[in-house]
Length: 391
Image 1: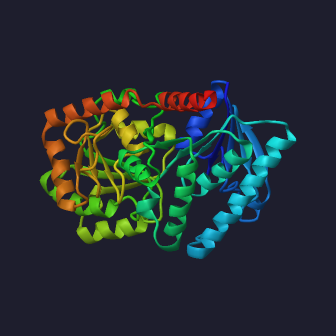
Image 2: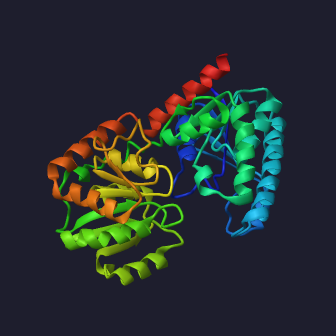
Image 3: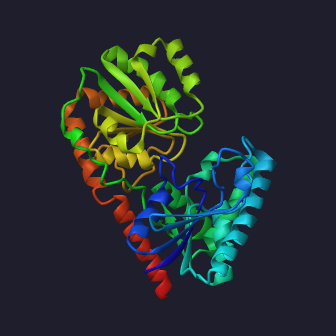
């Protein structure tokens, strides 16, 4: 049994859309490992004041530790940096006090990112003299800018160079992390819940004559380029009028996309479904003829692995579409194209008009995903931790 402290910006054990870290934590907790989850973003209580009070919740073998934090809405720039600094200090103190008062010890510390969480994990691992595992996390090198990015880069250099092992969920992120610290990351892609994917509905015919192109994720065009999808949709609908574009999820840009669909004259073929419970996502994916992922950065993500596990042909549009040499292979288990409406429309039409191509891509995608369930990802992580402890 391993005593492991995970540092991550979780906000509630009741989040309807579990994250990479919360999934891994629950699996390891159910397997008998002692898991502490230090939630440096604080407890989401519905008010800024509520997060100032510390809390500890034990759920499914995981001890969730919520330090007193500031959760100010819509902060950016210098205020965001100061909020993160305060929350980091509070998180370190809370973890030491909680574990110290109970006479508990951890065998290793895992960080879910190389930035704020990486700093917290670095400090705690140094104080306790235990191994440090740093997962780079989301590609902040592509998403952040200005002062936030400069500070993030500094924190990355500290945590990655101090780490005993580096983990990455994406081959492009692996290359970036290696350029920072000279350590080759262990590639642990995002997984899928094998109890939910694939659903038996994946093997049945769609329930209507509509042909669905499906996206699942946050409706936020600053990261996921659904505006590019809508621009591509006009050409797809022109060629195949029964096509419907399903956008499943919540986010800040729903009204913006409705307006764009109206401008393009495709509003009758765009379904902004809204959020759905995670345990129902599989059945919606299974009705899709094509699943899509359009992003400003990396091609891999939780949604892509869930598409793969469902045996669906996938079209990915991203700036780094041609930088992948593992997990995804364009033409074998997906199609990757530049982030361009015409290229995206061409790829979608290719899959919808060529049944043998769609079947080939879907079959290979499902085979790729067969070794990437959250159970297997968690097992690999605990092996990494155990090897470091034995050194």
